[in-house]
Length: 187
Image 1 (cartoon, helix red, strand yellow):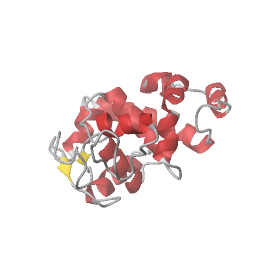
Image 2 (cartoon, rainbow, N blue to C red):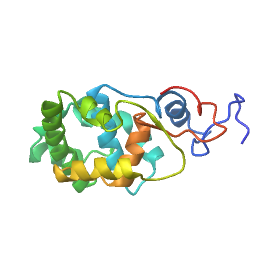
Image 3 (cartoon, one colour):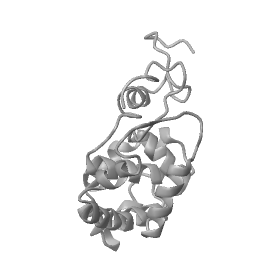
C-alpha cells in the first residue's frame, strides 16, 4: 500500500481513520507500565471480543467517560444502577455480559495489584520484564498461561486470543509486520 506520508505500516492499519493510524504509530506495541492504562486496555480488549478493534477504538473516549477514566477502584464498586446506566449509553458497546465482566474484573485486578504490588509487576514478570518480538500467531504459550491464570482468579473475557491481542497492545509482545516502519523500533 502507498501511504501518503511514505511510511509503510502493518496491513491492519486503516489509512482512512486518523485515530487508528495514531494508535498504530504511537501506542500499539509500546511497552506500558502504568496500571490504569493496563486496566484500560484490558477492558477495551475484552469489549473487542467478536468485534473489530477499530470499532472499540472509535468509542474509546466514550468508554473513558462512561467508565470513570478506567479507575479500577471505582469500577469495582459499581452497582446495578451504574450497570444499567452503562447498558443504556449509546457511546459504548452495551453488552451486559462484558459490562458485568469489566466490573468483576476490576475487583480481581485490584487483588492482583495488592498481591504483586502492581498489575505491571504481575504482567511483566511473565517475560522477565522483557518485550518479546514475534509476528503471526493469534495466541501463544505465553497468552495461554496468562489467560489461564486470570481465569483461575475469576476474570472473564480473557481468553488466550484476547490476551494475545492485549499483550501486543501494551507492548509485552512487539508484533509490527515485516516492512512496517515500526518493525524494528522500541521495546
